[in-house]
Image (cartoon, rainbow, N blue to C red):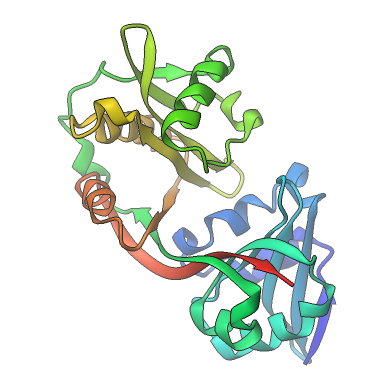
Length: 261
């Protein structure tokens, strides 16, 4: 097999279109033209065509390699082994555990955490929920959002351009934003969206605010997007339980970490 760059988003789409879309939310999102132009997509080819892909996304402050495999891990190991020498000296990655520990040494792997993909599969779970507690947020609320994230979720990778889309909901108390849910991917063309940055200020937790803001966001997205997903730490049982109550179910798992060589 040969490793080559994939230059056409349509070729990637043909490879992944029949895979479990909730496992590939970000890959589908990266096919959008404005993102694709800053993505380096590596492909593993055989005589019959493209067999596996890994995407190096340069749209963030740190390059992100999407290389989690949920199908043929042997192919993924061959691909990542083949591109390792071309990757930046430091990058963040989503990668299946088997490929990660096979291709990279322990000294290269930093801050590894186990995550799972979850996908909204039961939209009836939100039926009958009260509305009005959470309000829509947009560009004018960006500073409030950033102040809350700084206080309660400083590791969040907030994309200001996505905030402009208005697919964000929050709860205010005494004129302060205390709970928030937004998105980290949104594509009408490929019908995918990722819920992200879900957080509540430490002084206001355990009151159901997180569930309320996510529920309002889902109600807003469900008539626009066919596949709504999210990533959650595998050991975050309170969050997982909350998402299951809202109609999510678990899909594939992966390791998230930094690679430094």
